[in-house]
Image 1 (cartoon, rainbow, N blue to C red):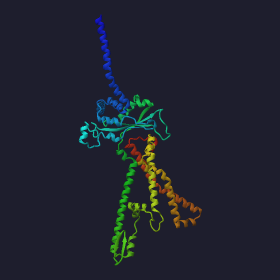
Image 2: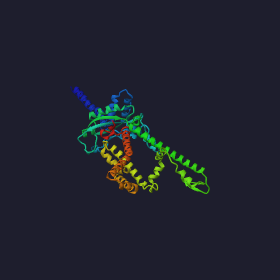
Image 3: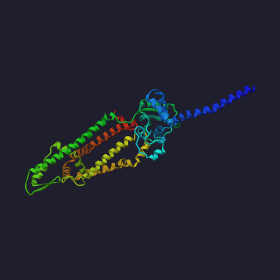
Image 4: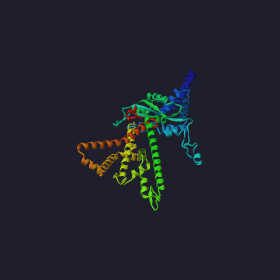
Length: 452
């Protein structure tokens, strides 16, 4: 009996020892994988993709990525270092859960950095030039969310979280969107549980420029307009040089001794003075006059000229040039500001506005009043300096002056039409560029879908 009891006690102790040694060894491994997926959503999405894409190239590459993460290979650590973890200040609107796109592309085409022999002796590998065994790609998944723990900023805010996944290129964006939905539907993500987040994807895409961007209406119109302007400027320069050459040839064929004139900065000898200036006053056709209006050098000099354009004009070109620059400045600011303002990360927009590099653009709001003051100054100056216009006003009655006022008012608005068209084109192109190349998502309040 004692022998049987001893055997039973020994067996019981053996079971206790096995439970105390074997089971705790397996639990840390499983808990480590589970805890990493709870803290890093990229690992959780990759695990689901590996299970769902079994036997495919995407599944094999995801399995290689997860094994590299478990083995702490440096290229996989670079992925986890930049992607998979939400940034700080979520309650203040920091909804961009992704790293820069170049950090994902760095695994495909690294920034080659020359290292010394001492550096290579210190490190077993070169951390700067390490690459992944397969091509990686940034895929953006946009999630609509709701949570009671969020600060309402009373701005045109859209509740979207931008999820950035640096995963193998062989995995399609549609498949990654399904796995992301499945992962967040389980509610295993730690931050999701803390903030009681309810998340559902609305779109997924790969940020890149393709033929779709070039085929957009705004892009095509912008390309046509820019090409037309360049062609007109080239033709204007050709017409100007050909007319100058023609004038020079006419003066050289007309000889009269002891007369020297200077035309276009060139001293011409034996040219009759009357004939020389008559030759410079050769009338241009209407087409040539229109083309010469697009001559870049002349317009540039006119915009920076501080004195009168000619003896018959009181128009101050420098002030008009400043007004034009301010108009472009303000229009560009409105395109930039109101395009970015509708993005979900409103507080970070104010942080970006405080950047020194953005100050020259964002300070344009203070020059709106300057633009109107300069416009009013030029309008009054040109009106009061025109004796013929003042004489016309004195001779007209009330009805005629009312018609004249309406005509001048219409002219003022029509002069701004090209700038308004330019602003509309810039807005359309900027929206298309943001929605195709940038990782940001434009919602219904951004104005991108107005053309649809």
